[in-house]
Length: 271
Image: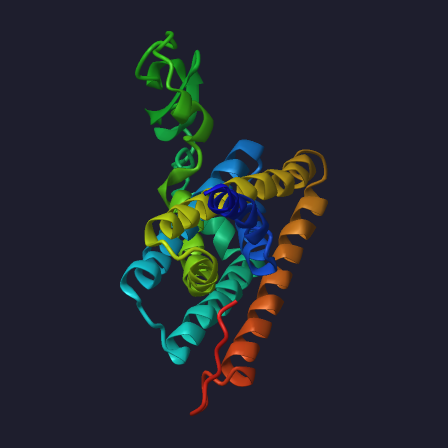
């Protein structure tokens, strides 16, 4: 029992290690590079980890509990999707489309012509919210009085639904690519399905924790550069886009041609 508990606890730290895989870090860097807040960077890491964990539990749980067998072509296709996603994220970053989408779908960026009513997030005391108003006194709908504390809105209200869904979806795709390898590794060490599922859960919590630490570390230079050196900030964003594009093309080539996804004899080793 002590050995079993130790192995399961090890799953948490292996999950943290798994978060540092190059394709994970590169994909998340393209998202973090568009934000100026370390708090937002931490939220992005948590959402990526949540998406990754959901897929690991779904696919890995199916392999462990129901004996699912993933054919080589399906497994390669899941890994191939990661390469396509990295290419898309890199192109969006380099063309500026990602910045336009982020700006458009973030709450608090809906301005009309000068002198007209518009909306953006602003605070009254410790509460942040959004409503249409103008900057002239007669255009403001209410007095700036103290309102009840809304901690979540105050800290994360600027992320927006689109910006929350993006790291979640990226995490889901990454989880598809790695779930089979994790599940097969668990089956070789833990024979009890229940304990193996607990291992997967702790592994997922570890990836969430690890990615939050990584995104906080990445978010700090972006936030600092954005405040003091706008050229450096733009350079970091371009660099993240180029790295994502290049690494995505490398994965597409490796999976499509070297591993044989586009041939009659695909060869897949979960890893």
